[in-house]
Length: 323
Image (tube, rainbow, N blue to C red; front, side):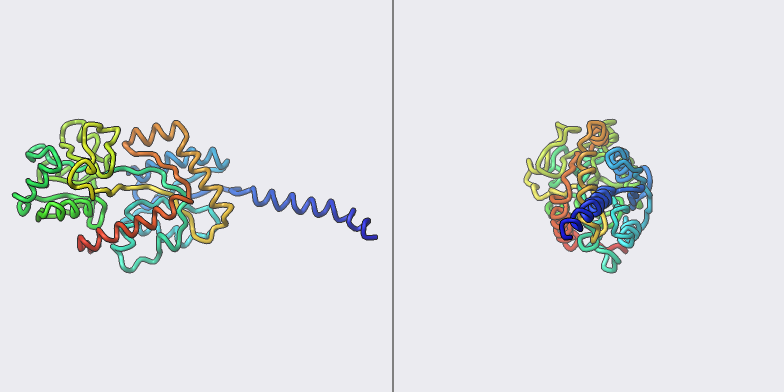
């Protein structure tokens, strides 16, 4: 009887295993949503949409971008943290969220606890730019100018606690100067006043300021980090100056809820890495002045934790407050 039963059970067991494998391989079987917690048209939105289009082809499902702007990216991040942990809702977070982890004391989500990093999509250096009337062409010149005239000078940012603010505060401190921080409601407004001469300098994400530099409306001084940027090969990196601590970069990455099945995490991460590697995506990102990354979740998760720690030190040192 045992061999007979085994014979009868064998097809049923094979069918069950086949069905289980098919179910596991079926993710995703419906559209995937990316919450972009900033307004449409900005760098974060453009990068997300560029990668999402390629992801849709890799995943075989539509990838829909939904803008949920407000509170320096916290409204969209909070919504993503409340989504089901099934892999169908992703968060497009940036270095602003690593800053927010310290800047805001009452967040209802944690970037490192409530999310799993899928991949860094791209990163950009911050470019120190000055109004053309400022008589400084190097970081050393600018530092000396700040020490001499700091109490009469001002630096702009797109808001308190942004990367632009904290980088400006760091350079101010390294220069032992006292330039005034002037926060604006967005980087575009800050750049307008910098071009107009109402403020004298600013650290800006390179893609946001590249056109102004190329048109001669602003003068570039140095880019943060270890290397010069291909878009401005004649502009030195801060690593080439006495201010090599100026290493901050803005990054743009995709996250999913903690607790998402590992199979879905692996599938999404692989699709993102493949998408960022696609020639059309590489060209588009580089055209924006961004450096494509596509490192995958195994590398991105510890990187995010390090970023939260690094920005924490800068937030504390700056005394920044969201109010």
